[in-house]
Amino acid sequence: MLELRGVHAVYGLSHVLHGVTLTAREGEVISLLGRNGAGKSTTLKAIMGLVRVTAGTVGFLGRSLLGLAPHEISRGGVGFVPEDRRIFADLTVRENLLVAERGGGRSSVERVLELFPPLAGLLRQRAGSLSGGEQQMLTIARTLLTQPRVLLLDEPSEGLAPVVVRRLGDAIAALKRDGLTIVLSEQNVKFARRLADRAYIIEKGEIKFEGPMAALDADDALRRAYLGV
Figure 1 (cartoon, helix red, strand yellow):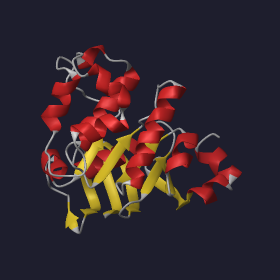
Figure 2 (cartoon, rainbow, N blue to C red):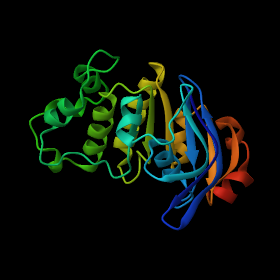
Figure 3 (cartoon, rainbow, N blue to C red):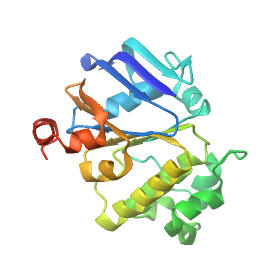
Figure 4 (cartoon, rainbow, N blue to C red):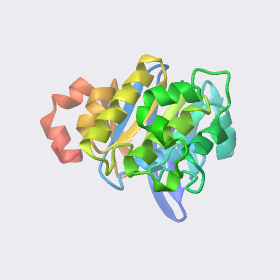
């Protein structure tokens, strides 16, 4: 469904990605693991057309995404939940959801409220007044209403209380059961282990490991070398 081959990407004069190759098959959850600054967020932004790709290919459903604007990529079926969330702070929770709702697909406002029950009691509340965990739920819910075929999640568990992380994990597991393809960028290996079918480790913009989560779990030296766990 989603395929990157030999992708190089830059921020200004900084060469960040060096030949990144990864694939995500339909209905699969893959996790992109690595330390801060390893290139995880840049990889997702390269998919979304938010950084300049200087070499390689980015394909989605057999179509190249290179040269497309981010809004075109989104409309084509790629949903992106950035690390900084980017909610509409002055709008209510309901208004944030209605802005994104497209209808006709697997996700509706009712469905996302089933996935994130705390939001149901906050629909009239201004989004900027929500806690960090509530904002994360809202951002994911809003993105789901665009009816994506693949969902890119950038550090969804970062900075959240354990109870909120578990709730987010439950929701992502439900999306996986629904057959949604998910690319999960994470530093939290425990969180990724619960959800991902396969893992990629990225370090200094290069893929250092690709394989089943079970293989990563079995390799203590690899985890210590690149993940610090």
